[in-house]
Length: 401
Image (cartoon, rainbow, N blue to C red; front, side, top):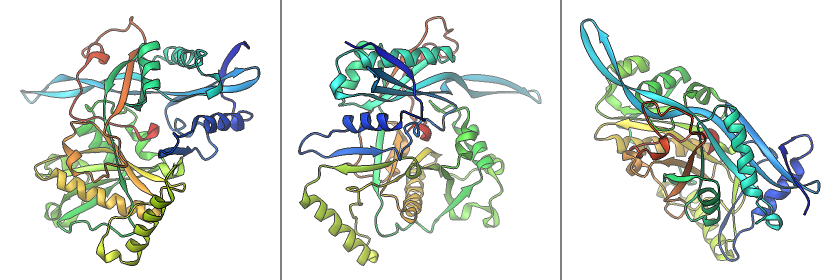
């Protein structure tokens, strides 16, 4: 057997070979629908916007037969109570506890070279790079029914099941979605959005400490706030600082990431009958938009998506306001030519009820597995994060979705 060489990906000479491995790995089950991904000629597009990233390839006999991608960032892993003395009064406020976490994605091994230990070898070498760069934890995400992937990471690589968020996907119809005129939607500037997120959501699990970089990225479409129509004084927005000092009873916020310019998706394996039905629904929807008929998007050819992240809010009417925000995002996605709008939230997320989605397009249980990379780290105020209980919400970084 030829010796396996694992080295860093070289974009000047590896693109074609890497794309060939991707093609070999994307083989759907016969007679079943399968989702294919086009990385638009950039194998590192899904990690390129992270603070630190690396892609490794495995070679045998000069042929690339596997690869893995990884990135590192600093995120919230818990919270502690901070005591503050001000004007002879004492206040206690939750503040985030941060840790350096690494994320593994895009592990591929050519079908002809599986069961040779290439997967664990690639994971091991990527973890070495994580440790060298100070990461305390490593995690990965996969479908809960991807038994081969789950077995590899939990059985051979020492990972444990950690979180099970839901991926919710809604089609983009030919017609515009009506947004309630009782709700005002405001587009925040990146500084206003950053202030709002840091003040209200910094203690949410996986909240990125470099949220400012996310919000200023060219792929960020914007951050949108929904409030009752009559809640703004003179109908004017006075900034997040003023808003947070006296917020309305109910409000919601979310941000939008343009995945359409990073990768495209395509559903394959559909019968002619299903394709014809989907096309017919779009034709009817386009011809009679006033009927507001649901239509199946053109997912049987390459399509893009908008990803909603940083979902949050409060109040008894927050779910209704979230539905309005999702409608607004749908209309933005429609104008940009996207096929679907997606998000990922914790299973216990209170705002989940206000997020429109089609069950047939969504993933009820994504599986995140985690591993502590070293035993010499101090437990700190959180302890071992891998053993912590899940919170009500989770922050899904759009850079790695």
